[in-house]
Length: 284
Image (cartoon, rainbow, N blue to C red; front, side, top):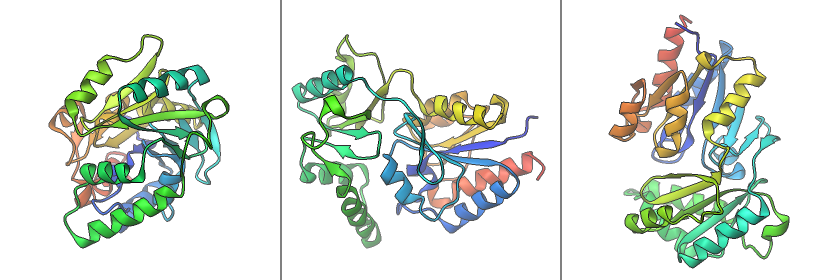
């Protein structure tokens, strides 16, 4: 059996617990893994600033953001990036405006740009994360306050002078999103993932796993030394293409079926449990 040398870990629904934080158990497991020489890489759909904020007290070896379009070192320095062309971004923007759908665009330096209102984003965030306790609500409010510090309009970041790496669109009507995905302009050659409530659009040549593969190559780690942990559709390719794909206990049954095995949920420190299992397989 091949030794696992790199573990790629999704953020929301995976490393982060239901309160949006990294548990002490997960931190301890990551530290233990890194002390054995195992590389820990976070692979998320979040923007650069949003991801770094969540990982403030967590030691890692690399960070992949915006679903695989940006690779950063642990200090936040961009190592590699893939961006839309100005033409692609203009077509995307005009298309989604015509479809009358909420969308936001992520820049290569971590800012979020939108023509939509904060009120509409609150509506989306609450729909995606139905908090049921005061602790959940306070976590949500804190997330929104931090988020708005990196949220601007296209007037500040014009399409013809800004590098955009990802477009995120959502609607309460899942059927509408499905129809929109089927009407992608022919001029666009892009990669799209969806979760029923949203669609995420990135340049065609990108994915979480493809960027993880670049990191592995830089560390001379073979494909057989890569494991990945995730919970949602934008982790699908990462879980399939990694030598060992591990689905979270809170992942869909479809994703679990595509993975090699399933760990515990994000409320049960599923990442820590998975890392311990990998270390045992490595006989550490």
